[in-house]
Length: 393
Ligand code: F0G
Image 1 (tube, rainbow, N blue to C red):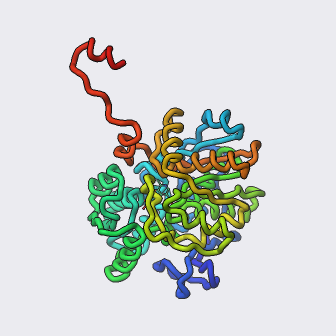
Image 2 (cartoon, rainbow, N blue to C red):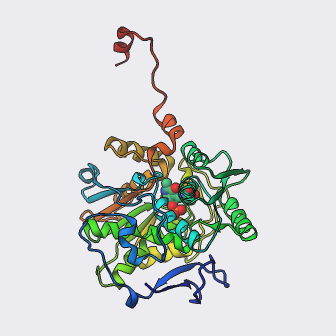
Image 3 (tube, helix red, strand yellow):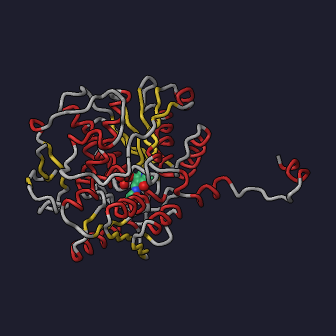
């Protein structure tokens, strides 16, 4: 498969792969020469995984894989409540518990291809957990910058145990990202934030898997933080359309928290660029981001697909988390934003009743145990006797 990197702003092409942005400052994307692609998979809902679609992934060597992708697509009782065909694709079922693994299997493999010895990222948590895991598998050093005190415990635990050098900075995610971009440049680390176009290639397989299993839905709803995932999933659908494998693209619908809502605000005014939110805040710490680096890609995805963006409150997020839990689907707060956003758009009449919708739940419940205790309270504690237990049943 032939491909090159192309700037989404000025169109400049690059054969070299060890860059993240264009000379003009624009974001890069992997452009595939479709004439050179030989599709060797069938969209038959069998053997779902990231590497099923290897013929559309820009990798030449043996992948660093922990068997990512192939996540479950569930029906839920939300369908009755909202009178729509609603599926939930649970990305929390990936090896590290989030969709980031799809990107990291490709990104870390690219690091090996480029001969890098160390990888780095800034993170609200999941990126760091996933990167640490894949770096461990590949035998690479991993460096992580986190906003100190603002990352859910499960994620920090993963990054530490898989051997990353974890550094908390007194600042927010946006500041951590600016710093890690600089340090990676100076130290020669391979940067694995979603500004890396190869990482997003892995994440586009979410779109492939959805089509593989149910065909093209009318809409895909997902939480938006740094805005890489919505851009990647849209690219996946766009590619299948360009290849003639599908003939429509779902409306890409981004959900943000009220306290971290720059994409929502841009879409509301029909703008092509965001105004940063300087002090983002939300219970959904995974998407506590005020200056999404992929904003330009995400806004294009939303506008070109006739999608939209919506904001939800922390209370709405926690309510949706509980509703999903009642269905047997355990997700972290950011993931529940997708369902909270869907509910809001239905109530506002933006979404029509007969649509087929896929909600992406991006991360596992166990990522953020402290949020659970805040929402549900601690377990009751009683004496070790039958009477005492019966009293609290
Ligand atoms: N959901 C979860 C659980 C996440 O961890 C993230 C991003 C998102 C949604 C938003 O995805 O950034 O592609 O728009 N987490 C990043 C991290 C920022 O560092 O783990 P996005």
